[in-house]
Image 1 (cartoon, rainbow, N blue to C red):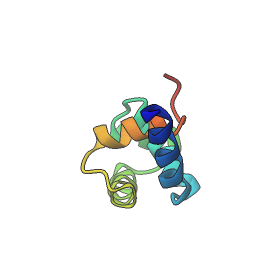
Image 2: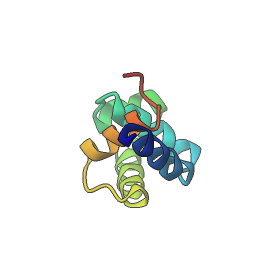
Image 3: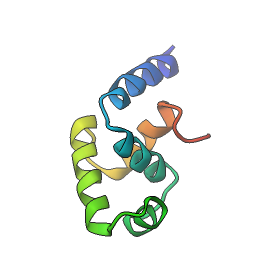
Image 4: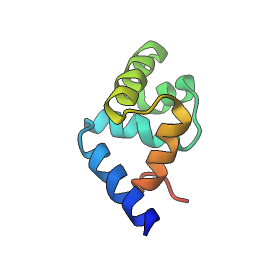
Length: 79
């Protein structure tokens, strides 16, 4: 049903991301801040910010919450 469609859609979108963007998206899905994501991935906060905005763009998400939900749907984050 709808859940399966959402999952397929999310997986398709995530396929277009780079490996690094997927890492950032997974962290975002866990509710981490840019600073926390930076610590985990050994990136500066500014770098994380640019990854996040590029990723939101690629995923056609308007905000972090939408991206986090997409991370769930794509199976990047355990429910």
